[in-house]
Length: 60
Image 1 (tube, one colour):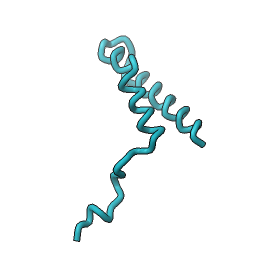
Image 2 (cartoon, helix red, strand yellow):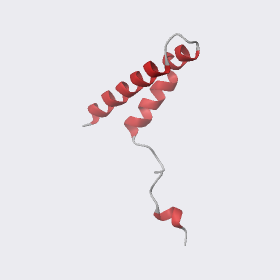
Image 3 (spheres, one colour):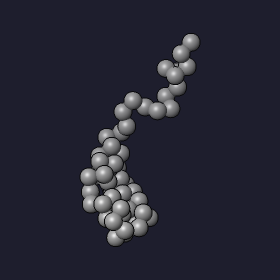
């Protein structure tokens, strides 16, 4: 019996708002600024989480 089929731990597609938020993070200048040392990783993570929350609130 294939137990992986019965376990929905990792869904095939992430929810759209989360996916869009992650794409925003990776396409934005936040990551570049962090790598260049202009801002801290905490600031990048906080900004990305705020963006995700904002996008999630739009879908409700």
